[in-house]
Image (tube, rainbow, N blue to C red; front, side, top):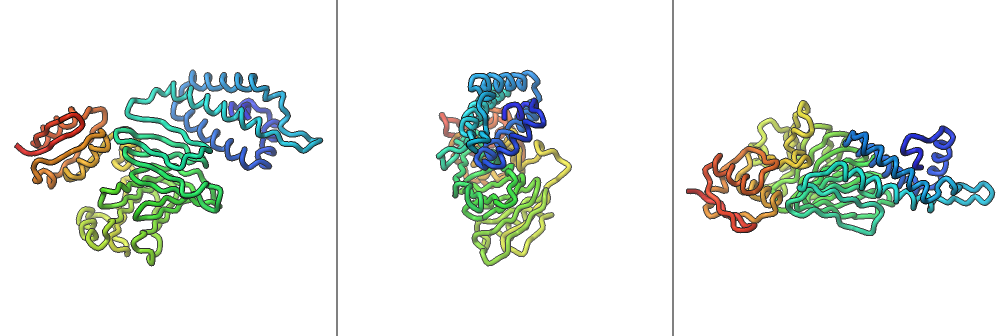
Length: 359
């Protein structure tokens, strides 16, 4: 297994590994996750020194555990010894993760977290942080500040189901016979293997699903008698949580949007000429807070999650003011100073509480 991962296995060794994995689904799943992580991190870093360090760890783990001396398949006893190999696999995986994360040296705003075959049922990210998780099936999930993800089932059934509160960016491992389903309070999103973003904070007026690769079907839980809405890449579906009251507001706010037959639901085209890092929907994944035409009440909620603060308005007129801009490396003090300069508001910071008003 280690030789295959490092690209040193012979054709006969690759065939032997393939046969073993075919007959051991649990080990196959573990191996798929490791391969996925190996390529993900290798491509992201492009650091020859880091890759060489990982290879050295593999060889060391192999030597210390005596992998070469352990026959993975006994032709006489038909006894698979994949549990021993799996133990080494886990050791290698942890080592790889540690070396790559050390080489990557992420900024202090980003926490990288890892979950694989554990008993944990909830993954969460605190305000002021963004976190990445690798789910049991190899799916990669980024959670924005103040978000959490729950396993609805154990991924061993006919579907893989999770519940999201907040915002998440998903790169789903493709499993044709086992759809991946994301539940929020207002919509259900069904996929096979794709890349998409879901924004569904409890305090937001709308639920947004943005598709980048593959395809998804979105069911509005408030309109269960309606057929699911299918999205194609570079489309964003906006669903009003209160369809009766928000339908006109959605249409007025998005002049170029496609109004669907579903009440309170529109589809907005995403500019496919922009790189993913430049798009407002995924800016948070790249540690950038974007706001475009947000009123200050909406902006305040974003700032609260981003900086882990609490914002109060001393003048309600501020709430209706709109703002466009972005923050990346600014501290909360620098961000508030910029808002004062750009929009003429006043502010006072008292520990983690901020009071915003007008002169």
